[in-house]
Length: 193
Image (tube, rainbow, N blue to C red; front, top):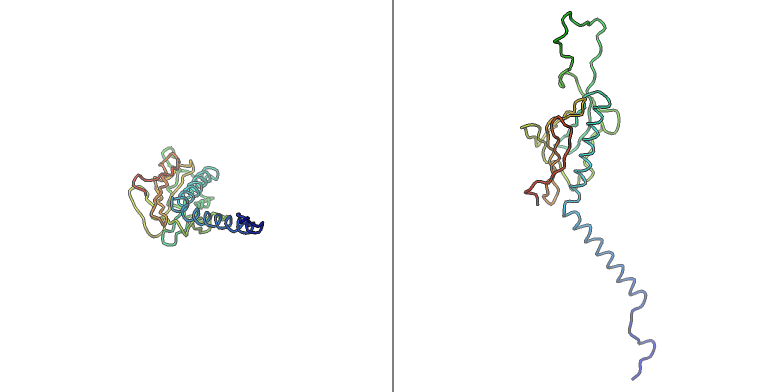
């Protein structure tokens, strides 16, 4: 029996649009779910934090003032602070034998204040819902709670430090500050997932 034109094989335009819409929807959900599972968020947070640390280093050089990067591990926020220069004493004069006098003040001799910009405000990581600052290591010390500061001298060098990040999937990332050189490295530990 011959087919009438209304009974021919094929799809209507509406059926094709529905199938295309479903494919796009499933692909979007799959990409969003899986993309975060391979450490995308932690790598983005690591690059952002490394850029922030590099800026603090350069800020110390350009301002000629010691800067520090303060991390509050309890609240998962950070900010930038600078050393307040001492007020000059108009009556103070150098001693007669000032050759051996060190003019470099110790870093802890003066108070620090937040910088006068958005950098001085407490801010979380961009991906704070997915990534946390797990710990900060300065020298041989490890801090997992409280506030900790990483100092940057006026030549751009910093304390030897590591900032460890961890995402919801258990991936770790280390941001390492190499002592004295000011070099900042982003490293994935060998035992990372």
